[in-house]
Image (cartoon, rainbow, N blue to C red):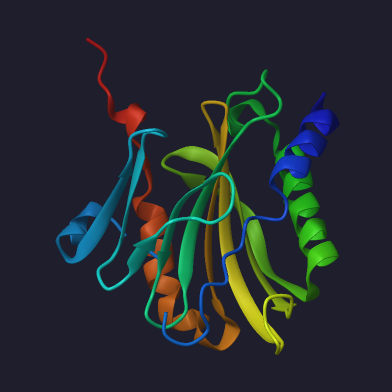
Length: 201
């Protein structure tokens, strides 16, 4: 069942949905700085996160996209949510480290199949709102949406929670990525599955 789960999930979610919003002019923090930021809350999927003021929330154009915010310098953060195709697995707590490693490797393979000159900067295990998660930092070349060729860098955190697959992706041009990297990591760290906060009566 392990390999079956990984293969089903990879068919659904790899590679992560990438939004290239704008290259010139058009991720993200904890409640300690919420007064200087924007808070997005999804009642449908019971989560919230904080993103910086000055970033614009826009409608997602791709299926299953729940949140997109873009910055004035060409960065964006997206949240894509899909149902888990393997109904017997509720979260990554039900998955072994070996399976999670296969999922990371499979996602990176999908990147290499779709984009050119893929470089894996780093990858590993982490937590999203105290839930086991995987992450990867990848640089790649894309020319599909433009007349010219550009190098992008993306940081993606993926988690499975309550039978739903969550992918948080931050993207910017490679040369500009460092300018929004802290905001991106802060925003991912602010992500909360809000139904975890409900105290039973």
